[in-house]
Amino acid sequence: MIYTITFNPALDYIVRLDHLKTGTINRTIQEYVLGGGKGINISIVLNNLGMDTTALGFIAGFTGEEIVTQLKKFGVKEDFIRLREGLTRINVKVKAS
Image (cartoon, rainbow, N blue to C red):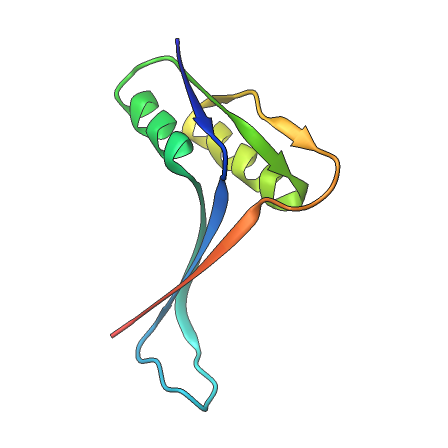
């Protein structure tokens, strides 16, 4: 069993645009949400390589629970400490041509 620790996990909210134009409304052509953080990413890769791994760290709120949901879909075990208050951070990434 390999344990990974992510002290600062995050949800990456990624939106794709045809073109980014300032001063106007920009419509997305694609968007998705990925849970991550260095330890979480490593646990996913180790699991894909067939190794038994458990992700550890601190999560809070609905954003933390989304990370847990995604890890379960990947088949990664988790044993996060769930905080009573706050939210796990969200990174917003805009990708445009």
